[in-house]
Length: 451
Image (cartoon, rainbow, N blue to C red; front, side, top):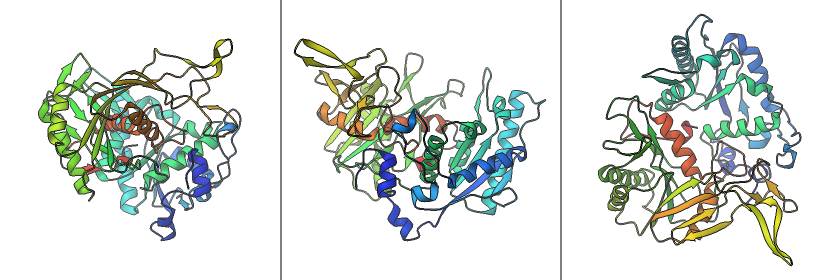
């Protein structure tokens, strides 16, 4: 069964991989917990609310449905440990006298040690990390030659260990919108347990999508400044395959921030695309579509096409949000052009040139309820995406349709859609965390470890 509303789809049809649950592929989603001792009681109370029913309150009741408890929503039990269990380990927060740098690094070491103890005691599907409000000042610092983010540092360590993690700040338990909190958090736990909540329907089965994301660390030593967060391949159903990080050997810098690939680097990326399909025991698709936020430099185009010379069709599409373009809906009435009461409809495409168009991914829609017009966020006039095709011959209409579909495939949110397709959303995030990984090259990662 299909649904346009992801929460309704889960409730009415069960998750896509429910058949695996029925075959006892996984009898429960088992959590491990890492938490400071002084926060244990509060955090345990919060996690136990996963079994409770939460009702939405205005203004979200027009979109959210009742959260019926994790077990009911996802048709699989959530196993939550308690303080004193081997799956629940303490970590020591910084001392009040610690400066930002020493306190942050000490807390990071303590959290990693606690995660390792949880793993040694059991094999949880997801390790949940509690971050009390009192330690927020020690979660990030920047000096002249060093930038540290606790979340990204821990994520990078755990990715290398194959450990899925979920950070939860203490303030989450105080959020007045607990229905939203539990829908979103439950989805994250389900996905990070390597489960599949939903798939995409309707795209050409012979097409694959690749997202580019580049991380530039100006403070790193020369030769280690750029990490390419790409080769994250989505098939036509929106499933993200394994993700491979690549150190860019000879980046081309244009301006202060934008890094592009040399022809050799781009060729290696194209070869990695082929390798990931081979590892997944899938044949190379008839069409490959590349998405990224900056234009495709000439050397990038040549390198990618060289590596994928036997692929029948290769499209390279630049995707950006045009913040300076804001339009409202309108229609032609008897007395001329009439201004509508809602934003431009989601899915509207305005062709600018043969290779360029505007696409409203963010806009009004009837997908939530056919009898009402819904606008996600309910504020401001939406900005369109600017799509620019740098290579390929696929129609802009088809490219726009694909981007609309992929905007519903970010498994870290129950929003009706994201402003950018999942190819871009995930690649940028993974490139940022990937810059901290100690090794690159032949190792592949499941992208759910990064989110």
